[in-house]
Amino acid sequence: MDRRDFLKGLTGAVAAGAVVAAGCDHPNSVSAEGMTVGEVPLGKMTYRPDAHGQQVSLLGFGMMRLPVEGGGSLRDNPNAKLDQEAINRLVDYAIEHGVNYFDTSPVYLRGMSEEATGIALSRHPRDKWLIATKLSNFRNWTPEASLKMYHESFEKLRVDHIDYYLLHSFGGVAEDGTSDFEKRFVDNGMLDFLLKEREAGRIRNLGWSFHGQQSEFDKVVALHDKYHWDFAQIQMNYVDWHYAHEIEKENVNAEHLYTELDRREIPVVTMEPLLGGRLGTLNDHMAGLLKEHDPNRTIASWALRYLGMFPRIMTNLSGMNLMEHLQDNIRSYAPFEPLTEADMALLERIADEFAHFPAVPCTTCQYCMPCPYGLDIPGIFSHYNKCLNENNIVTEGTVEQREFRRARKAFLTSYDKSIERLRQADHCIGCGECLKHCPQHIAIPDKMRMIEDYTNHLKDSMV
Image 1: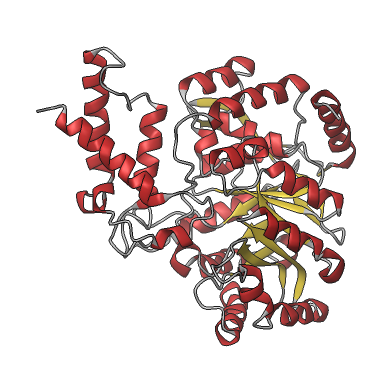
Image 2: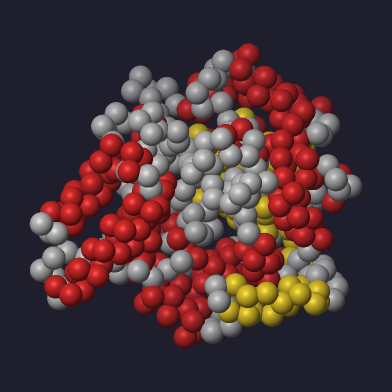
């Protein structure tokens, strides 16, 4: 099937499968990315069915990036606490506007996400929300530790059943040939236990999330006949559809992941629709193309609307720690308006340009943290990518000296303001501890040396 037929098929399937709650507009207008984009609709959220017919909001709330007391992030202040009042306000607003899927994990936000999520949600009737959490036994997968993690999730979330339970982020293979999936879920008996919990009703839907080798994905998808997966969670966006493998060779293109799940009629949950925010802060050229095509939509909304085009997707997770982000995302799906062929073609063009842009493919998930030597790994990459987008990374000799001096000053000044000196790239010793935890398979020590070399080059040019 060629691209044109594929797009037509998507448009027809989406139009037939979407469910929209009727209602009236909520008189609340805010500005996102410097643009006033209209009212936040009330009662118009789009829903999709799960494996058992439960209606799930097309926008899911990812509880991995939540407000911190005093602002900033947990990376900036190791002693910081989550701002429960701000979290409550976001959750209240989300539920009021039809969002009913909330996703967390025992390891998110240094182990504080589940409890904060449980506090916020328990203030609402149980039939107003669906909770997803995970068996995140990355470092200790003994039966005892895994069972303890499972039972503590019920306590922290304040629930007697979990709507969606995931085997969290498998996909790697150790040097001895054993896979994450086998050692973390099969050999320790946890999968058998969870299947019984599903049968007993304490788990309503059992699934998994994937980051890793295609062979591992294919193996676990093929087990659907045996285990009857209720859903699966994959990283998917308009860049990863064709270019995930090209950006980092260990990654798998979302086209393969989605197609295999769709073929088996397994409902799909997507993560990183904005690639850790990078698809919401494109460089001037790419952002300009989208604004010229439709000046009334925010850059981030394009990524969410793209995912709505795939009918097997049940919900799309977005981490939202600011009210304006939540409001903008609600607009994208309340109701969902399908993209045209011209829209999809433009996103394909931008995806190609983005994939060949020399940014570090970090989504700021913080799985690499804490660094044993104190580096702020996500912060360093975010700073570097931000400077790329703002044209503040240049090489002497390729631009006029005046422009080089401007970019040099912008990079070095903002680097020291954003990242403490002792947490910058030059303190990386290349221990490789972070490599075991990065779901994007970034060669983190190599990237640190690249940024260190570039920083030293800028400093040396001032002599």
